[in-house]
Image (cartoon, rainbow, N blue to C red; front, side, top):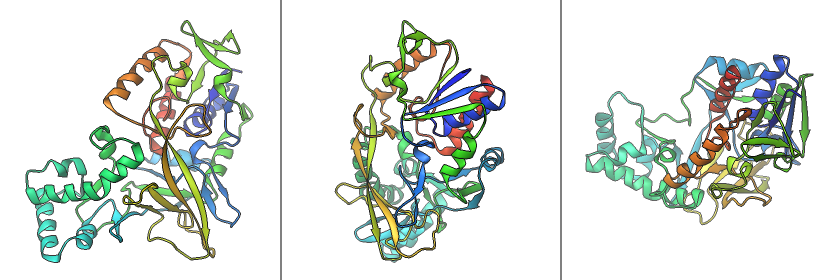
Length: 377
């Protein structure tokens, strides 16, 4: 074995493939019983392709990243649409002029749309943070209304903390549109696999120099002692690509980093459709944040519909749950920096990916990061 990769999600699998193509013998471990990490999908008992860990689509502005994905699967154009429901009314997200028409009286709505066009002339969208800080009281009031109805309650449920505590980067992820345009992303390439994400991973990992071992918990075999990586108690000098949580690798010596997990409640209905978009947020619901209707992700022409309610829950290490989202606060970022400093002192440890970087990645960002790591190795 020339390299050990802990985790066969997108980051670990891409690095494994790149190294294998260079002639390295690579062993890939994953503690789950399947490949693909959080992108894993399967056909359920009703014949619908569903994603076990919540909705994923691939989108990017960079042709070279899309071309890389095309090596291992066929792709079909797919522009994700999302929405939100409060006060019994549906609006597209990112919020746009339809949102204003839905929730504001006509005269007030026309005045507000005019002000937004003038204030943000030449721009298609802005973050809610920018609009909240705008000097015009009507524009600011619009952002405050959205914050009250959607961002604040959704944030409280999703992250388990108030919106005042959350890092601003989280609130900047979803823009406000200054038009009637819909669609979650504006990237040049927006696609879903023709077959499945799992098919993509099977092809990606299908190389004679790659050995995949599932159901293997890396932390039962890997540990750090005196700045050295040990494999089953013996020093390992080969490169180790680690995509798990750094606090767990270092046995929580600086305390455990905060993550949020998710619980999915799965349903099937004989109705042809249950909501207006594949992914819809429900900020006023007491416990769940959103519903994903997988019949529409991608569009599957079958009777009935399979869907999942998404319930955020606190993550606890050692429990039967996944650490989905790092909770980014000033305190947690300082805590992570201590673990990162320790990891950087181990020359053969390559730590990367959503968990090891304590950062939220879109798929294209994870792919680009993995390819850049391979260039540096």
